[in-house]
Length: 314
Ligand SMILES: [Zn+2]
Image 1 (cartoon, helix red, strand yellow):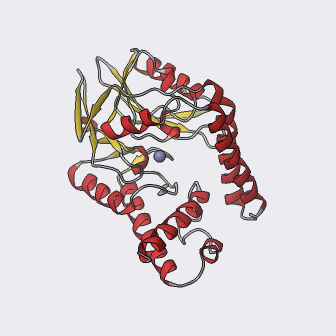
Image 2 (cartoon, protein in one colour):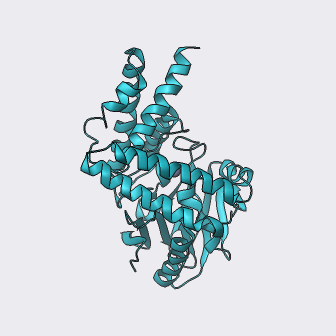
Image 3 (tube, protein in one colour):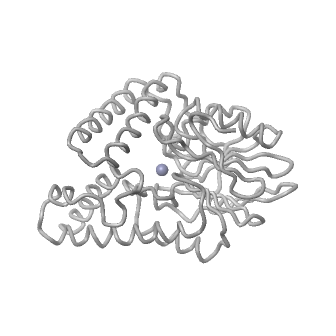
């Protein structure tokens, strides 16, 4: 069932994670859920070609076509494979639908320009690095951006048609899923899919495994509240995270700790009077040096540093 873009990790009975393979050009996990009489896919990866393989794998694993696709949030690494599910119905929060719809049709030239800029900045960052882990991770990211660049002319946007505010339940003959949203923390609006019978959560990017959580343009304070609510409300044994391997509920605590430490660290940085570049030179926060996406640590730091500076100067 594995292919060059993702490996299939069984999370629990009837639930599989499609876990992106670093360096393959693929980014963002997806999940496949067999409800008995119908099949649901959660997120569609960053590329049409891996989206097509995901649909094929879901049909093979469950012997049924994919009836519903849930988009946990609007980020490209979770929705770019949507176009390969044209006979499915798409589900998202009202906000995620708005965001996807406001983006309009893919502007090929504009998107190519943006990705080219990102590739140039990654190349530049790479030339300044000596740390092996950072170099490997930047190479993974470059493979993602270059593969995406080539796919841009073939991308088309698919907008969800079924929307919900905070909870949508889909009953199946074998198991039921709850599509839940507690607002936005990682993005402006984040949804998760909970399968009570299997005590399994498909978490989108609210929860990651050994991967630096991406905080840019999100709301870390709301994110912390959302994770505490998930801990309190849902009984969870297994998690299919947005990035990294299938794991258990300890990953919630990992992300909570990271967000809290990050807020404390950047608060200290802002009040220190030292410059942003001084803090960027300090490297990744202690304890997180071996996590995936260390380049996002820098981008998180820069973003949070500047948003806190703005707040302090108000
Ligand atoms: Zn995301």
